[in-house]
Length: 300
Image 1 (tube, helix red, strand yellow):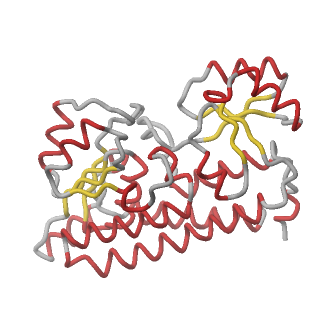
Image 2: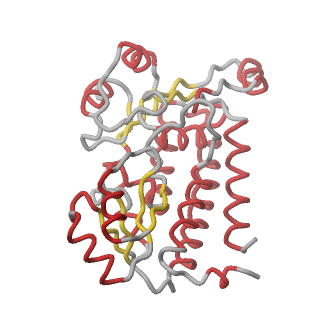
């Protein structure tokens, strides 16, 4: 195993273990019995937090630990962007002590209700230069999001501030490690362009001096011409997102199709849980081949 893969695998294992023992309901998991007992013995109840998109549910659960009980508002497999409020979602929002949402018009109906409660709009708190659906794919921005979430949790539950701050620092340390791995793995790749269905990976590409070529905005003919110009060997579909355009480009350009995970959808029941860091590792591994990176440099 490469040093890069070993480091990210360790990070993924650490995060998976922490999330498994936390008080969240991310992916439908109930709080662990030990977490319930600790909360009961301390005379407090976990803070009820609703996150409006799965990556935020993951992050909030990590930062909150046993002090929070996190629910992912949008059901698994459902596109969260622009999601319409259902009666069940309205009930969840009404019972929340804190709502953590992306903001910037990503979920207008949900944001309108969240504005009437204690809430954190993460994107405005972190950056004015990213689109909501691409923020978590940039580990630098997601590290800043961890700080914003910790601050919001502390404002609602000051007793947990030390725990939130410690978890924030842990998460940020791992996120910067991931960013370092991306930088070292991608900095010497001879190809700098990669083709995707849409612009979800634009911010991540910019952070590591790559250029995303989204078929949705570039168009079929120009995308095929770009593939020929740079001798791009593969194009990328997005996991969980059907794209006839990507398939059409691949056929026209006679190239293969690989997959990147935009991390936007909550996993459907029965699928393997993957932490944020595990998905970032998979995406990096997927990019290395089409960008013709020298992966031997990652071996000890």
